[in-house]
Length: 147
Image (tube, rainbow, N blue to C red; front, side, top):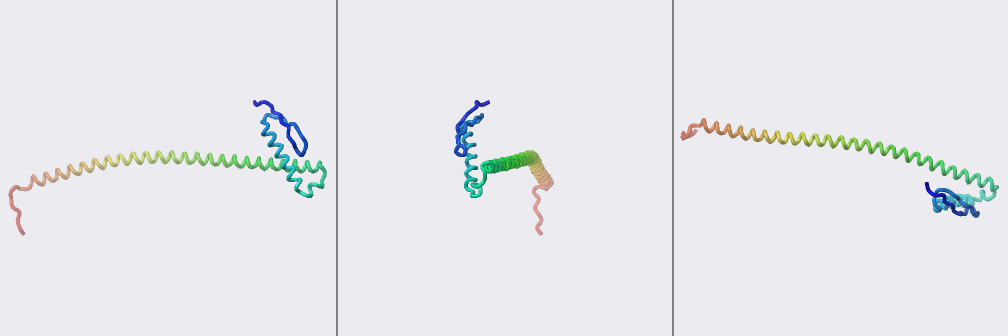
């Protein structure tokens, strides 16, 4: 666990000492966020005329609204990540399936190529044997008849 950190910050013109397990930079960032909220509301004319208690309540509501919107955004992004993870899983599954099909097709192609080569050799042997048979049956030295 990190060591506890303290930092002096200015919020709405008042100095506060914030403590926490985050770094001083983070604590200053939180104070800056709250100061920005005060500045946003100070720029609204109607806000200037309400009681300090009401001003603080409006700022608290606004900060809570930011929080819940951010939380909803996180939930949405987590769902998106889950969907993307599922999509990636499905794509990986499809890829592996297609790789297996490709490997099987390549193996079949090699077998067919080998079989084709063997058939071509057999054909050549048969043609040669046929030619030999035909040459053996031809009477040697007899002239061909002219038509």
